[in-house]
Image (cartoon, rainbow, N blue to C red; front, side):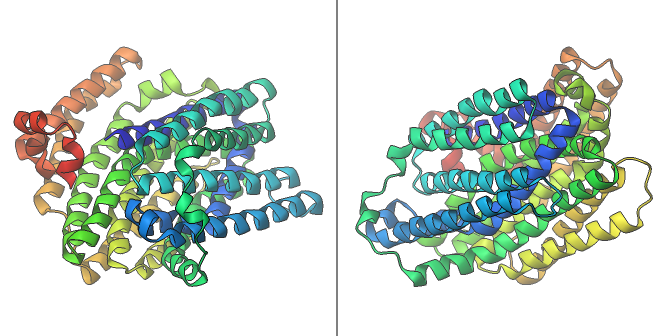
Amino acid sequence: MWMMLVFAMNSLLNFVVSLLVAKFLGPAEFGRFTVALSASVIIQLLLFDWLRFAATRFYSQRDQIEKPQVRATLDRAFLWIALGASVIAVAVYFADLELPLSSDLAALAIAVSISNGLFDFACALLRSRFLDKPYGVIVIAKNSLALLLTVGGALVFGSARVTILGMIISVTGSLVAASSGLIDPNARNARPERALAMQFLGYGLPIIGANILYQSIPLLNRILVSQTLGFAEAGQLSLAYEVGIRIVGAIGSALDVILFQIAVRAEKTIGPEGARAQVSRNMGVVVAIVTPAVLGCWLILPSFQTLFVPRNFQGPFAHYFTLMAPALAAFALINYGLNPAYQISHRLAPLIIGALSAVLVNLLTIDFAPSHGDAAKFALAQSFSSLFGMLALLSMLFLLEPMWPRARDILGTLFASALMLVAVLPLRGMTPGLFVMTAQMALGASVYLATALTLDLVGLRTLLHPRLIEQNPKKLIDFFD
């Protein structure tokens, strides 16, 4: 439970940092910052994320003792890749290549991919062993330093370059703070194994390939917007998407940090059928939480924009957020509901097929959708592409794997969300402000929760039963387990 809360806090604080950085950099410089950051995400996925996936899937407290070669292999692989990437970053800086970004920003994009890759890898190692305390330390340290250095760099210098440097330093400092929890003495005397590295790479490559394809969509769209409409418009589009992704990412990741590890444990202790049953239940939980969350974000959007969005981003923020809301919901359902089903079943090729279909739909939408002098068609392209990718994965899941949430949970979620919409929508026309947003959130949450309890969505009544609470203070984890 503590790990879930820390994960949610990490994602939400990242969202706060994004808003502050946008405020202090302004649209044009924030556009450069987000293009560089999007590029760094692609690089991180390509080079380092297979190690994160392998750590989550194949490294545990038991493996630390019985299979020290697992950690030794992971560590050695990360070291060599990081060294190679560092050499490339230096070469890019001095090569003066023709790129959408300046050479120094391109080099910094590679550097921040290394630091963020190391942070995510370290977090995966701690999560896989359920080491709550060091995990909390690394997250709190990273966000504290980010507020000081990343936001501080944007405030004082107004420069995308200094802001990215602040990100790199904050991540490095957090790793130093949590170094004791990351040390594995058993791995020091173990030999890395090439066969293990190939196994980890084989497991991670399809997932990485799909993620790279999905991440290429916002990167491509931002580059096209910056070249046709300028970096300022790219910044406007980027902030709406980044804020939305931070919100749904905070919710989905907080669930996934527990749900996927429980499914993995079910596979090891009960067997494949137990893991499938757990993943089916997990999908229902993700749908029941993500759907009202995205709908609620849209309902409070006018007040949220007035209260939190920097003034020079207001207007386009609400416009683009509305157009990309379906993309945000699809992103969460793909990453935290559907992908784990394929990972558990070891059928990873469909992930690539779903991502390729999303990329194709994005390109077709950009090519054929009418242009209105802003980035609206690019925002729509992201929504259409994400929805199509989700539908492709759902179709293949129906054909390949018997893993489905209960129909009553899906239908109940839609019904409860519709009631929430009917109840809160009249408040959306009121003058935006803190009182209105608080009333909307209270009313919407009350209506949805009351309906969910009445229908017992995903067993919610069992979860909140007083006797269960009294008997087991860790009720959430045990309930999902």
